[in-house]
Image (cartoon, rainbow, N blue to C red; front, side):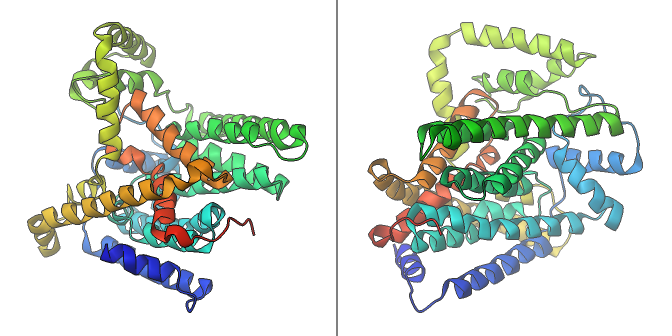
Length: 421
C-alpha cells in the first residue's frame, strides 16, 4: 500500500513536468540496467548459448547446423548478434550493452500507448512500472531475444493505433509491417500480433469503412507477407536455407500433460533423433493426434496449469541471469542471496497483477482503442500458449498489456480523459 501511495503521488505530481519525469526515468533505467550487466556475471546457457553459437557461425561463414541437430528455429536474433561479434569480437559485454540500449529505446514508446489508455498519469505510471519491472531488469545480462522482440512489438502496436486513428497512414503501414515481420523473425510466435491488428481494424470503424478497415488490413497482411518473403529469400541466398518451422514441435510439447506443456526430454529425444525435419514433424503429428484423442477430459486442466505457469510467477529473469555465472566474489554473493532476489521479483509481479486487475475493470465499460488493443494482447498471448509450448519467459512481450493496465490501476480514479495527441 505504501508503494502504491507513493507511486500514485508521483504520477499525479503537477510540479514535475513530463520531460523531467522522462529524464529521471531514463537515468534510473540506465543506471539499474548497467548495474545488472556489470554486477551479475551471467553466462549464456540453453537457447541463449545457441543464439551465440549460431551468430558465430554466421560471422565466420561456416555451414549452419541442420534443423535436427540444434534448436535453431529462429535466426533473427543471431543475425543481430552477428554484426556485434564481427565488430567487437565474441564479447558478452557488447551483447549485454545492446540489451540496455534496446530496453532504453522501448521506454519512451510505452508512453504514447499508455497515454491513449488514460492520459498523462497512466503514461507516467506505465513508464514507472517498466523501469521497476523485475524480469526486464534481470534479463538484461541474458542474451535473450525478448528484448528486441518487445521493442519491435511496441513499434507495431503503436502503428496499429496510428492506423486506427487515420494518422501517418503511409508511415504507420510501412513501419508497422516491417516491425511485425522482424519481430516474427526474432520470435515466430509473435505472428499472433497480426490477427490482433486485423481484429482492431474490423471492429473499430471510423469514417469510411473501406478506408478504415479493409485497406489497412490488406496493407498489413500484404506487407507482413512481403517482409517475411524477403527475409527468407535473403537467408536462402546467403546461407542456403531458412529457419525450420516450429509449429509441430511446439504443439506436441504444448499438449504434454505430464510436462505441463514445457520443454521436456521425453519429447526432445525422439523428435530430434530423426535424420530429417519432415520425419520429425511426422512423428510429432502422430503424438499430437494421440494426445488430443487420449483422455481429452484432461485438456481443460492442462490449459489452466499452463496459464498458471505463464502468468503465475516472475522468476524467469532471476533464473536465467543467475543460473550460470562466471566465477568470482560477486557470483558467490548472488548465489548466497539468490532467494532474496526471487522474493523481491515475485512480490513485484504479484503487485503488478493486482494493479492490473484494478485497472482493467473500468475499461470493460469505457471505450478505449488502446485499452482494447492491450486486452487483446494479453488474451492472444494466453490463447497461444495455452495450446503451444509454454514457459514463464514466453509471457515477456505480452506483459506489456499487464503493465499498461497496472499503470491504470496505479493512477487510480483521477485518470485524465483519453487523448490522442
